[in-house]
Amino acid sequence: MNLKRHLLPLLILPVLAVCMLAGCGHKDAAESGVQKMTNETKDKNTTDTGALEKITLNEVAHSIFYAPMYAAIENGYFKQEGIDLELVTGFGADKVMAAVLSGEADIGFMGPETTVYTYNEGAQDAVVNFAQLTQRAGNFLVAREKQDDFQLSDLKGQEVLGGRAGGMHRIM
Image (cartoon, rainbow, N blue to C red; front, side, top):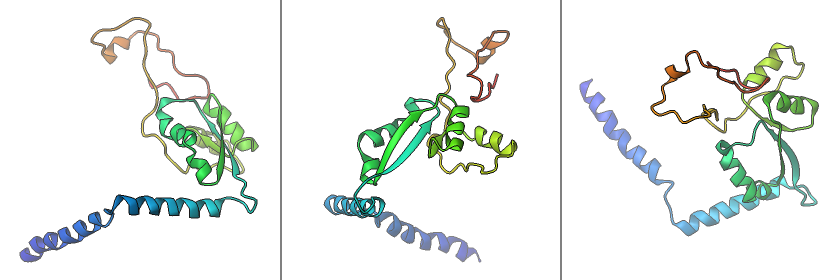
């Protein structure tokens, strides 16, 4: 029994090493594979006329946290995949959800709270959250004057302005 406990990890290590090295290869071969895959995907997603599929994405706010998505748009990666992406800023999760529910937007880019609100209100065709682009909220605490050695306890008794109606709840 003790032998199995020590032998099993030794047997698993070579298997893991082979799996990790399987992704390694010559740079040119990898690039040609990516190019081939992109062309195959493009052929699948474009229509018979070669037109791009029009998708409207309504984002809750324009934020530096979404830089990877903006870079993908600017570098034409969506077009390479057969998508003509129109990016619209809704300026609030409530407005983004309204655009999705009305059909004005195909995708709403917002936090999950609005999905819960509309579901709890009895939406007939509730939206589904299906992706996560960020793992942190893009909220900042700012002041009019510089505060050296700031502590959260400095906020005690102070007025803190939250976001806006329909946005994320204030946590203080």
